[in-house]
Figure 1: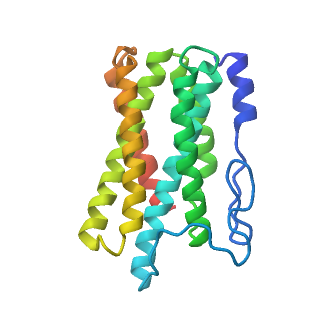
Figure 2: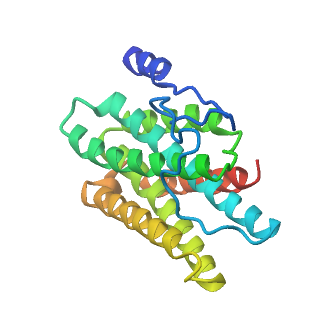
Length: 224
């Protein structure tokens, strides 16, 4: 049974998802990201062939989906714990995730990369995961943070290795961005551990289940 406050927040926190190549807009504020004829943010080199284009599209698509999902998780946690002593801590991590999502919104728009069609699902699932973990208290929310951020940082590490093996000079700017975001995710992971994540009920099981969901989401978002 979901408390009325959480149920109300869930209904009102759902972010509309629009997928359009003609009018790319921020997933949060709906403001245009790239005015006609303008270039605001670039980290990708010009692609040399369709294979490289497909590889980068998959990489950016899943990264965008991951940051989108992380934003929804923190939104769910704030709906439950926003007025508690844990609120400022969760808000600080959420603010960093908002920045990550904004950058990937811009990169996808500029490079005309299609977001995953699963965003509406991640919209609901992410918020529900955040809210339900927060209903277990601060420790539950932190356990969720540890599980998710560990999965995302490992995913970013795999991308860093792939780009380093391919051509580190060619992908220098993209590597810098991913490393920066990876470091933020590691910081969130460590913050969760410092704030009682391991004292959450059935911590090991909770972490395993959440990370299984993260791996499934990563796999699906690359392909759909």
